[in-house]
Length: 64
Image 1 (cartoon, rainbow, N blue to C red):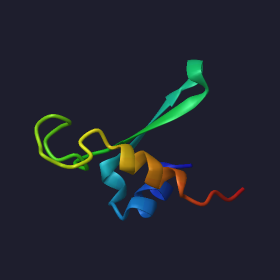
Image 2 (cartoon, one colour):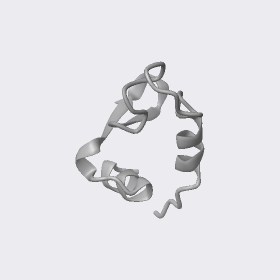
Image 3 (cartoon, one colour):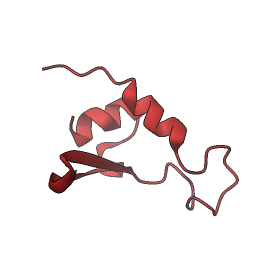
């Protein structure tokens, strides 16, 4: 999983995706800049915390 593959999956430019490796948790965290408008509580989106976005990421096909 790379910033480029995640950006392609969400239809975003790569410049709006950042990946952070969380080595102590053996995990990765992706930031999709601008996807929640002006913040979690600053907009009236139905899914202000991005739960639907995380589900959409789980649908991404991985190749090895």
